[in-house]
Length: 180
Image (cartoon, rainbow, N blue to C red; front, side):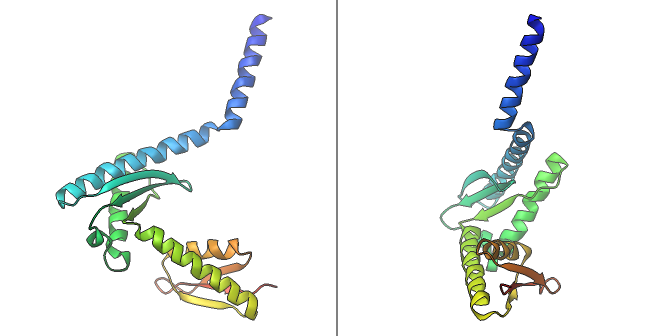
């Protein structure tokens, strides 16, 4: 009988622990942290080869690994309109894939370029939502990348409005819909 009580107590403790942080979440965080470590190692080597100084910061944001490089003069790693940054992100994702065998959604930021862009696009989404609400007419925005459209869609949704993407890549754009 004592054994049954101990088993029941252990099961209850396990159930309580899982409610606090499910094992699946722990596995996901551990996997994303590993992706971040692999990416950081890859990027560290790249910085060494290019003879650039930069500090790496790793985090887990919105169910994806995020790595940031900050340093004195890293503009050449961002490139015009973030084109070099996009290429480096894809190369880093490939390095993670090579090590893990799994596709990565890792986000790379250099010198705060993406953070600044996110802030600007959030404002664009908020302003478009306000315009659509005031005018009662759909508001069509300029073509954007999938990353940019996602930020705008999130900002529009946070403002309580609806939006959709129209067009074909690379000319796909967001349309903010007026309230009913």
